[in-house]
Image (cartoon, rainbow, N blue to C red; front, side):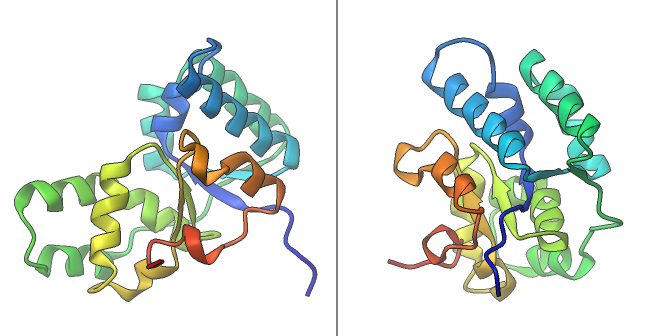
Length: 176
């Protein structure tokens, strides 16, 4: 089977907010990530919930980037993605209210990733940590790829260039 060169990526509004035109390290990393997504012809996933977050938090650069992605027809709009079973499982687990709230705040990203190519780009390390902890109870989370464009050791733009594959070490269930 040929390598997949284009992927549908869920890109959190945290990346859109940070992607600016300054030379700040975080701004530059997020900007480079978005530019690579467009250059390589990956697609951005936009559910109504993600679009609302982007409207509230995106930078001027991200606004223009999304407009160009829309013009190039590189916006994936999956149908309904809410996963009631996943949400019910999270509610049933013995979690603190603050942990449950943090997970549910970003659950729409997970749901959108499950409905597309299982990949999330986000700066939210707290959400990633909590979701990783849930993989013991929610096996479906183990296959979810989570990448942070600002973490140098993750080489996010290289990952994009290599087809945004579901590399084992990028999955929430990876245990080195």
